[in-house]
Image (cartoon, rainbow, N blue to C red; front, side, top):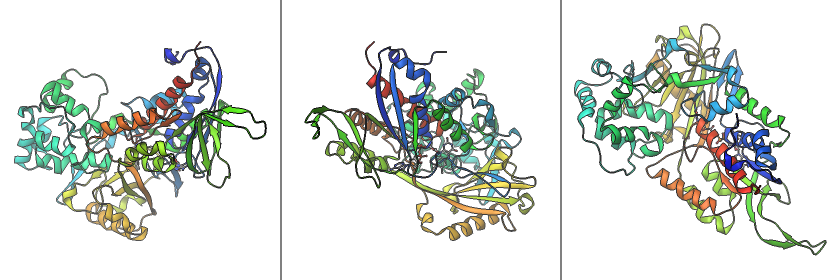
Length: 508
Ligand SMILES: Cc1cc2nc3c(=O)[nH]c(=O)nc-3n(C[C@H](O)[C@H](O)[C@H](O)COP(=O)(O)OP(=O)(O)OC[C@H]3O[C@@H](n4cnc5c(N)ncnc54)[C@H](O)[C@@H]3O)c2cc1C
């Protein structure tokens, strides 16, 4: 199969060198796309790629650790497959056989109501109620809350196409109780965001689209049930049937991408090499030794601890936008930096802990539990990781990942690790009837790691892209722009690679 876009197919050759900054999944996907043998030869470009990574390992936020017989994801634990980025990459590197789906036997979610875990109504996906009967019989909503939710089918559709917050949309269509009791904890768990600020168009565009096309989310969902277009699902909560992970954890997938890159012979890895600044090179300079006039373009990349910068034809920055802005020191980058800094980030922490199953009164018979903000707890959600995927905990044990902080409770992250561990332990005792001492527990912090797609996000990104386009040879990729998940990050890296190939292609 020839997957090279027609406009990239050309025969002339030229050599360019590209710096990729960051070896998280975005940087790896960028390097892989650029280095791919087929794309490379078809595009006629000789490319050498250098990946700079500040830490001593690849993978960035993705990190799998083995300890005490547990397989622990310290960051992301899976990816969705209804977006092609991750699956396409896995197919290209021959990794599909290493992917495993969620365990069907526990495929449902719980939500806390008045301190008790209750099942999310069967078929309820983020905000789409799958079955009116499941809504009418759920203990999660009051009777007026249920009737208001189901009345969505008769709520008049909004005329304007302006962006709107998640909270505004859900309140308008489904009522305040559905927002507070179901949608805020389910969607908040994914974006760790304030629903009053979260942009619907940038995060869940299919819901306003349902309103526009069918006049109602419920009517659109019922119509889709009659005429399903693939992606069959069951359960409740997030769309769990669509999630995959790697058998040995997501770091196995990162290693496989890096290995595929290395096999091309075009990628050089520079670990423990932090980039300090980037400056534009444009126009002519004279070579003191030969007095010759040199014409060069591109970017000078300054590494921490090196005296002279290194020159590259193109640079792809895969860092959070605040970190990207800190690198761009030139005057003509300043409006871009201002736009990059306008994207806010939230911090969170995950407490990973291994336990004996017998230490819980609750049967933990689900993929996890989400906590509405109005329950006033000190945790956002608990993922029952070893229920979700096999091979995560030894027999008779369970692996939990408890989420803390986010945009709604940032103050909790000011505590030290011991206090956070105590706080989480108290909540697990109270909510799930936990007792005993965990086999292990530790806190993993993610400071300013989760981009917040606030209302107006798409317009902000469009401005950033226009400003970046004006700076030849500079490319931005990552989770800040067109989706926060792993498949989106991969897609953005691959898109940056394709744009480089287009920019530097030679006419045939
Ligand atoms: C807590 C948490 C849970 C998540 N769970 C999921 C999930 O289950 N499923 C899912 O699909 N998505 C999930 N996500 C989102 C997902 O993790 C991201 O989409 C993805 O990992 C982003 O990868 P990245 O390469 O863009 O960034 P990163 O992984 O942040 O990589 C950036 C890299 O750049 C390096 N770096 C930073 N500064 C410099 C510098 N100056 N010079 C050189 N290198 C530098 C860093 O060390 C890092 O390795 C989660 C995110 C978080 C924070």
